[in-house]
Image 1 (cartoon, rainbow over the protein chains, first blue to last red):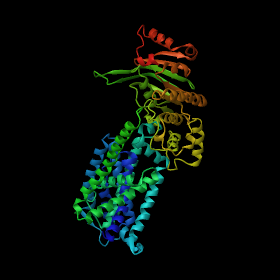
Image 2 (image 1 turned 45 degrees about the horizontal axis):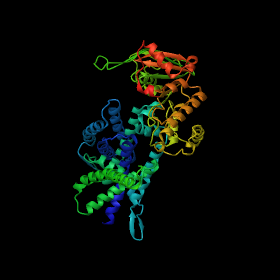
Image 3 (image 1 turned 90 degrees about the vertical axis):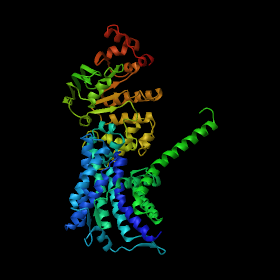
Length: 311
Length: 265
């Protein structure tokens, strides 16, 4: 596999790591499966592209994407908590509504960002050299900037999850009955969690649109599964013993996911096969621990039977 | 401290499954009273506890805590006044969070949440001091996830979390029922120690007659949605489980107290 493909995979993995952080917040912290993600990712891309083309500063446009994505998440949260709609359905409803909204925002199905100043052109203009050891390029200059940006976001999330409000959010997903008995409105914490999560997802969408040079109305399709793949693969490979560790793990999971995809492409699979590959990765990562546990348990029973009779 | 006035609650009103859970319940609890509540299944004990905590709203009547009308307040809005320990040791704590994080949530009971650190060194000092009185060695395991603790330890921690902010009312909902006898005894002792220390106004539901007689300073018996016996401290001290059964039969006009769980314990 060529170096360029690997470097590209790492850059993408870092950007999609932000998506993974967002999915982690709902899927693991709030314990709510949120399908808004597919819509809010494209929403982030659409908002950023539209405002950049209209001459807004790319930083501001990206921030706007974060805020609007947060609103979309809050909408799902209100549907779920106040409207008492099942979480999966609430997410699907927002997602499908966003498809039309995204088209409205963009005015057409695809917005190219050619010759526009974007965060990505800024990063390239910084001219940071590639990191090479012994003639082998390990990281592109762009990836180094991405690492810094993604780590800053990660640390902000780590901090937030350790504040009073963050503890409430975590307890809402962990034991909602308990946290209500301590005076926390779990409706509010759920809405805040969904807003923050979709804000991050939209931020990822905004960055990805600028990185790939266009926003597309279909760019969000399958993002929830990619996010889940990153979270699950990250947790399995890099552990989840503490918040600090698991937020790092999901970002690394995202990079691993991109590398796997790069390898699959290198082996001659079509880009259109990638959704299938993604689904298979998630199915594999979800079932293997369960199956392995079953085998382990059977072995334990067998050992106990063979070992001593007082079991 | 707690005034329950003319509270009625009917479940599934107007259907074949209609169930009168509470009928015209009046209860006035003075500050510092420790009430034990017994009654057979379906007597209305849990409904009464949920009315006080806000999990359920009465159809009629009012509930006041410390002079404040809380009848229509949601559970989380009145949580600042009430500490609660559930029967299930898993229910009162968040398993994937550490001991210190659980205590930080308890410390914030009913207060406004901020973006300050949930746990800091000053709070840690307080938590250590509080955990010491449990005698479980938990003061040295602040960073352990609560899910790793035993049922007894979790219930001890739940009790501490419910009480150390000195709520106006402490609700104990059969909080020793799911534990083995030795652990249950430990929790009973801790409960008495903590209630005594903070002079907490307490309502404890139990299925254990001995426990109901030995603990607290007032005993209520519920039956069929009403309070049928209200036994003051002086009288309670002299009673034995058999006396309670007899008192029940007298109150019900000959109907015998039929519940296996009572007779066995």
